Amino acid sequence: MMKRKVSKFLRRKPVIGVFLLLFVVFGVYSIKLMSARPYVVSTRSLGTFTAEGKLSHVGVLGNNTLYGRSVSLEDYPLPLVEEFRMTYNYRSNPGLSEGNYTFLVKATYYVSKGTEEVVLWEETLFEEKGPLADGSFSSGYALNVTELDNRSAEIAEELGMKRLRRRITVMAAVDGTGSVGGRKVTESFTHTSELVRDSSAELYYFVDTAKGESKPFTETSTSRANTTLFGISSDVETAQNAAVALAFVALLPLIGSVYLGRGPKDDMKKLRPYMVKGAPRNVDKKVYLRTEEDLEKAFNLLDRPIMTYIDGDEEVYVIINDGVAYEYRKPLPGAKKTAN
Image (cartoon, rainbow, N blue to C red; front, side, top):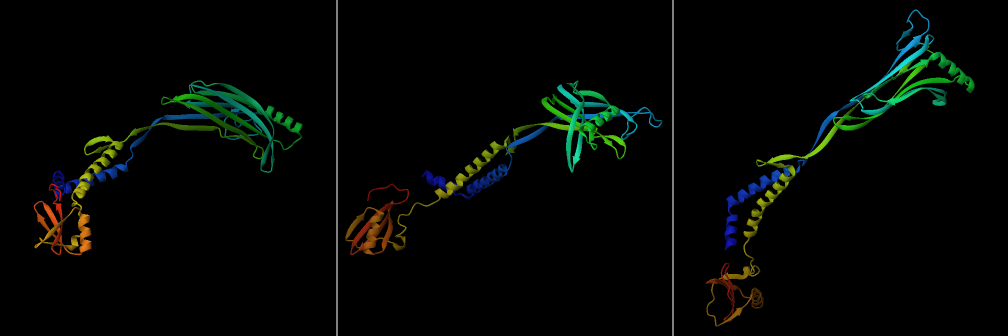
């Protein structure tokens, strides 16, 4: 009885329409939310660390009436230079709280072998090491060109090589630790400059005298993404699960209406084409059949039509053959079953 009431309720068009609409709405939201990312990755800038190094130079010149005793130029006349006074300055921002520096000037003697450079001798002219002060340092060195030329001549003579070439390299290196936006950072900085002696142009000049580095620091965090589902705010993952669950719940009554709307199983389906409505007359004898299988066997043996009629709460199936009624009684749907 209850099944029939539920089936009747679920098979009503307005009820089916409501649940179908709910299923479509929840299904659309489910598909939409499935494409949403459940987590949000945000990046926050902590700050930028910068480091700068610069080599300044002044040439001390011999007796001349054009430049004076000392001058800072991009190109120095080779015959006039007696000495180079070099100063190197390094600074960092934010300043490294701890660290050490090395300032080095070296001379390299080499020859060219095709495109290959062959170094024959190398010596350090000046080296200074020390701790950083407020994330910076300053160091200087005076390079006596006259003494350097004499030393180069000695090395060339000792090696017996007239085409020996010379390179003066100025190097600075810094290693230290500091803080950027509350995060501890470890930084390294190297800078190499060179004093070039161009005999063909009769000039001295420095290359790569300045270097700067800039490094941004960021902090990445991950949090759950939020969304609103029917006016209720929650994280995306919860909303995804809720939308799928609601769509499934809305689908259940639709499935139930189809299932409950099905008629009862017809055990007489095979025999229905051979049935005629009507009650038998002139019956001399009755043979009661117990099951649908017995009725089917009797039909196959006798090859006679099956008469059917309603008797009270029972549906009666009868095959008449020579005055004998082969009868099978089946309770109507919903009626209380009784023995035949």
